[in-house]
Image 1 (spheres, rainbow over the protein chains, first blue to last red):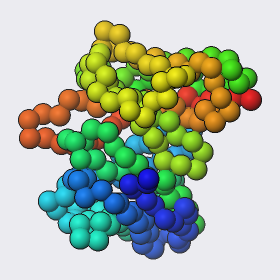
Image 2 (image 1 turned 90 degrees about the vertical axis):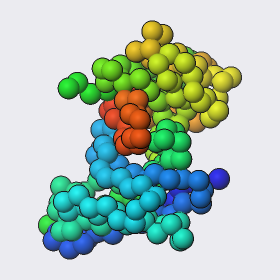
Image 3 (image 1 turned 30 degrees about the horizontal axis):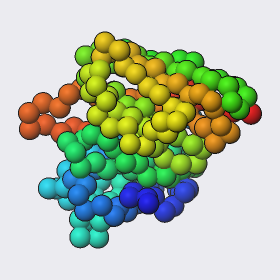
Length: 112
Length: 118
């Protein structure tokens, strides 16, 4: 039972364009959502988060949008840079941030 | 600030052998997690400690996996006996205890220990 799903295993975009990574969840108890970025042979690193009381959170080139009614969130990267090439994991929690449930990840490739 | 330290980085064993992984969290972080990440999948929580007590181990295969966090700092994860399907990266993560009203949810991950079972 996958409670957090990332349906696109990979995404390729041109440098300078927008990258949009999507994530769907099924558990309506989730109240906090995070995006993590992972380079090969490294552990995931925190990128950006959003509480369920908000519908948008922005940090520089990264913006996360939350649509609670659709149980959907997305990460927008504008403009995309080659250094953004990595695997992006969506994660959700409902217990004060404890016990994150991760999606399967989306591999982003930004071409110069 | 030093990050989460894990060792060994790589381990190759044969099935039915045993293996142990070590984790040293960020200083002062009360909460420690072990995640299993199988190739092509997202990390899956195995066990969560709060100080030296277990908060959740519902997804830990207790017939072969064990974990401890003595003195509420370092932690070890052991697999005995290993199976082919245990081949994965074992990630340790830590998190500061959330302050009142706070909920950062941010976990800090180590680089992981990659296990290959032949």
